Length: 280
Length: 280
Image 1 (cartoon, chains in turn red, orange):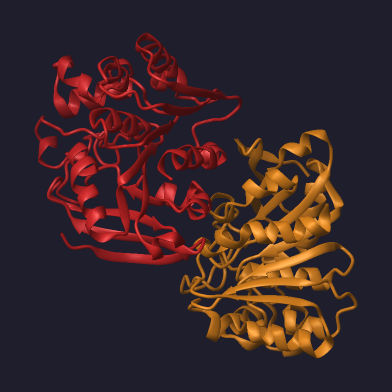
Image 2 (cartoon, helix red, strand yellow; image 1 turned 120 degrees about the vertical axis):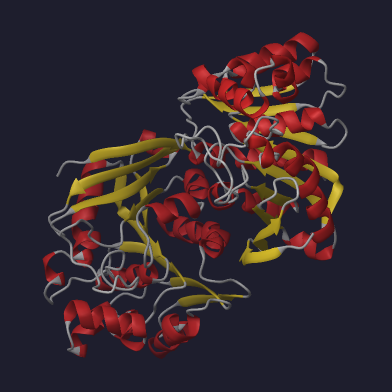
């Protein structure tokens, strides 16, 4: 697996790089970003995954979330993957909608045609990219945390729940907590994996929490002025699912905050600190 | 002078707003951004101006520089103006070059046609917009600092030098220190104000420092891996101009850093702290 370096910029004493590679999971070229803190020059450092939301690429959080400032202080590597396969041959939503197809992989492995040719973001994020990171960066893969925003918060929660023992910490910003119970989720899961709702449970954080073999504590920040809260995000469902089985959850409703990166940046230091306490 | 609110997002406990208004200085609609820290809810706070570089709008620093994090802690308002007039009727570089016309106002008052109809960014930044800020935001105009990047660093230095007594602090990231001595400057000053080089001195930080009636200390950070350093930025000329007259300058050459916002973000906290020490 060879990498092409697209750019490297010195940043807070470390290296902010962007890389591309041919992905076997998606059958396309994929682009991702890695921030190596200054401590990585002396040996492997823990890794924090950041999964982005609808319409985003590797770039949004890399330039807008302000995560490098604190990752540099704590000595944590950041990995920013893309949110879907891309390319002229990759099928997209026929109407060009923002919530399906390009930029909206939903961190699932599609089984329905034509999406099943490329949309294997679950395998890409959980299998192929970790192997690539381990092989090419000074990453201590025994110390991994995962976070994300919105669709990426859903990705972070479900990937952590589907891989017990892999992550030492998990958090999310305004996550879609139950795709089985919101329009974005119905469209994505129905489209990518079909109409059998039993198959959807593997990609629903609230469903997975019911049977989770591991009770990794979850930190969630959610703005109460978020336009998507009521219809799509529904953080109360996560509260209920966790309460039911005693899964530790810190759910912070943040007054006046919306769904934007201004919200994410405001609480990024808290999240990196949450992960640092488990990883360092 | 009435303002139209384009967007407001809660950010680090304060308000990140974007506003537009009809400018008499430029004869166009102008857009700018203001960050009000949480302390502004209790009364007027000091103001830090951030002037952006070539190709930028009000948005670049607002989303990429990470300044709100520390401005929130220190209780400083941030103002992010645009870099030129804009609109279908505003003349642009005939070749669409990035270094003249739209996005490249150079913080001068143009005297040459056709630019003199709209390109009055010196008046806009130094006269019209401060009056608008004073009238519409909880800004303590007796406590102002100014900074900027590249062309905006040139703007910050020259506007501070042209208005002795107005600012309590000044700094710059990789500024164009002497437009009279670099290709970007020759093109901009020649185009906007004509071939008489005596007229250029009012917009050249190194020339202004020679006769400055005020010796406000300057902080400059400059990456030594900046591709524009040798041909355009030439920070050594600022060093020489300051040494000649004893103007206090802290010029920090930052090893390995380039011209990007990853560099700016890395040292933004230092700059806001520099201003806070003079303003608070």
